[in-house]
Amino acid sequence: MKYLKQYRIPFSGLSTGKHSFDFDVDEKFFACYEHSLVKEGDLKVQVDIQKQENMLIATFDIQGTMKLTCDVCLSQFDAPIHIQERALIKFSEEDWQDDTEEVIMLSKNDYELDIAPLLYEYINVAVPPYTKCSEQGVNISCDPEMLERIQNEQEDDTSTRDDDQIDPRWEALKNIKNN
Image 1 (spheres, one colour):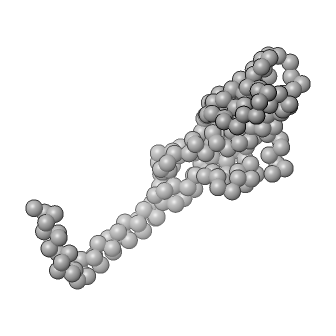
Image 2: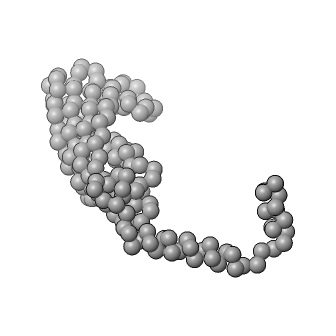
Image 3: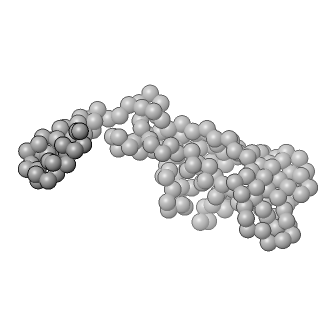
């Protein structure tokens, strides 16, 4: 977790106005999170912070590639990613634990903003629920050898199912479905 300390922005010494910070996200970042959907990537993050008297407005611009595993052929491929997000950071005297999607509450005593959890969330939410080489990758397609193996396996399954004896009670139920 010491690695994630570099993703903290000390805002207490900043003057009012706009400030920009650059970060790199790679496999060391993802290794800090055990259940991350993304294990490898090469991402550049630019964080622009607009400091005001009682709040910060942080805009995130995340660009690069992340390594995903194809759900069809199981090969790994680089998928381009471009994320733009915004977070509002407000300061409060009271102990407030109910952060929302866009509003983050900090106490008046806090002096730095830890953006590592935000980056982790933004990147993992951007992973599509169904990954496929030809859809998320650039100029690549699924592994033809693996697709052929899948096709052969499916053909073998259908031929073995036809050869098996079917219980007559199940056969009667098939007739109901056809009516």
